[in-house]
Image 1 (tube, rainbow, N blue to C red):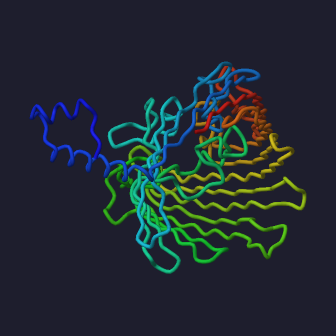
Image 2: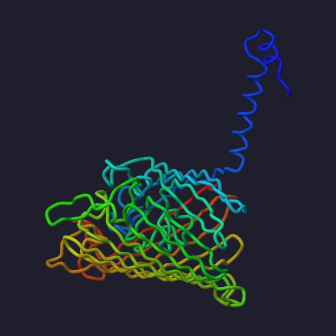
Image 3: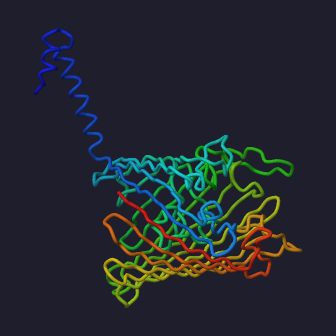
Length: 401
């Protein structure tokens, strides 16, 4: 064991003992060993947004609505600490995702006592322990708060084909607190299933049920249940190798921070990604349905088609075409001009994104988006700026580490 001159002097003076130094060194080594397999990663997400016309208030633009339009923005900073599972039979790890900045409030993984929509510059997006049991090919369990298992798009915009998020994304649950099990049955089949406290986001939140007069705490047995099945085409499928087909469901009760008009929420999801014979071109599709029962039954449908093309080593093109329908207030959130009847909403959306890599570790993307209200209710803005169409431009610059 080597010591510097200052340490030797302290030992000579009797201020410390060699035994205590040895214990301190051993504790230090234990900490370093425990942290050696932990990784730090994340990104800094910035943007510039321009609205061609008055501000858009549609929920389809939640991450780039009035507060972010016509200017430069810090979107979010994400930090991830993770110790992934290794190859041993009884292996364990963890993951913690932390959000900083305005989009933390948009994601809003609230704890009890904090109202949904409350402005916050910090959010604990995920925090879970993961363990593997040597059952068959290995059965993995997440215990804690984790992202929902369904959906074509995710919160992390850089992991999506486009800068803006789809209509389908905005009717999905975001995260759950509970237990999730995953099993890779074969090369082509993976299964997941879980149970959580509530359908919607809310760390440690508890489910509520409408009793005809007020929302009351649900029974302890009334949990949220979810399941997912993914098929992946093996190498024997030739040009279709790697194609995926996924189907999932999340069914349960909301929390007090969730959909207050709902007694029960059921969400179905089907998505697919398919490579094509044309090198660099891939196609995708997603369909989502959310239905609620309670004070007033509601529904929402969203279908989207995706194309991505890796034109060169540095340049990628992506497009999304989507059609969404739903009960009045699903996407226009009740602020746009009220129709004379409870006429449903219907929107058509197009997004075109150019991704060009100029610097290492930096994502640089430009996007043009067009949305149209198909019902004639002029839901793409609040009075006096109500209109039928919305056009927007976005520049997205993200550094990943």
